[in-house]
Length: 414
Image 1 (cartoon, rainbow, N blue to C red):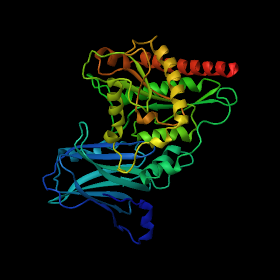
Image 2 (image 1 turned 30 degrees about the horizontal axis):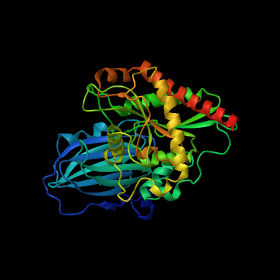
Image 3 (image 1 turned 60 degrees about the horizontal axis):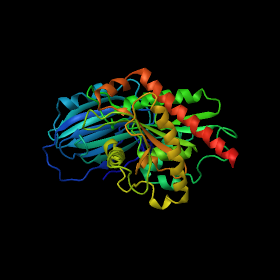
Image 4 (image 1 turned 135 degrees about the vertical axis):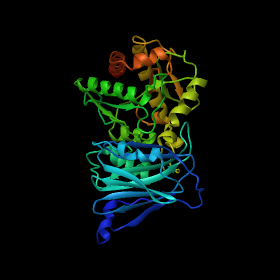
């Protein structure tokens, strides 16, 4: 539906104000579209701009020089109060956008102009309605000359947007040697959701993406104090990262364990308690686990990915290695669940299983921790507190230590 091209290619054209077409949407849309929301999500890796409307939008995107700008013309819409707020949404610390302005270019066209702080590679696409969102037009601004050596996430996102993530994914799993003895234990912390995808929202407007990021940061700090451990985070800011990229980053960093942190929600606000889940390749262990996996796997649709041909890791990868990994995941999950029971009531007393896409690293024991029900008013209140966040982080770390202590005992017996 759309194309993309780094703005740095303007060097091929001569003269100030040189202009060329970057992407054009299909023709034939009705001229009664109305923009109902505009959002800007700045992050160090990329900045996302989202235009939400009641109908799919007809647009074209191009670039202008002196100064460097990205321009988006949207046809069949009229300037309204929502669009007029765009300029106020650009934050001073946005790494890519210096300013934004909007105007009625002609009777049928609204023009959005983004002045830039650096050369960018725009990536523009449309998203069909999902969850509470209607039609969305998305523009992601990546650095045109990003340092992929220093930022492995940027490299993985580039591969993902090209459809090359599977080809670029490393074949190796965790590094050789006994974790915690011959080398540090490497933990990948995955705060769920982020950016355009808020996750679940509590009665008092607490967003899941925010509280799990805080818990993830606290866990990261705790692990940093451990002499034989090292932690990485799939995201350390309010940014959307596709599920498969999260898995790929864990493998890229050769993680020994993967912990995805979430805050559960249910239509019955009385539901409460903490839970831990592992992957299943043979069906879910309960209806609730199956439902939860479906909602978590839908994060890509909510957060917005542009490659319709992308798919989760192929089932051919679920061989003997995957089966052994799931066994280890269940052991790891049990240790974490036991410790969580000391700081919160448990929703289920055992580790449940379902087909969670984010747990599909074939060689890394992986668990998904539902810290509490954000839909429960009492637990939402706890999730907002630094004390509870810290206790959850400490519980996860205690589970990690117990898992490796047991692993060491088994190694000595062997």
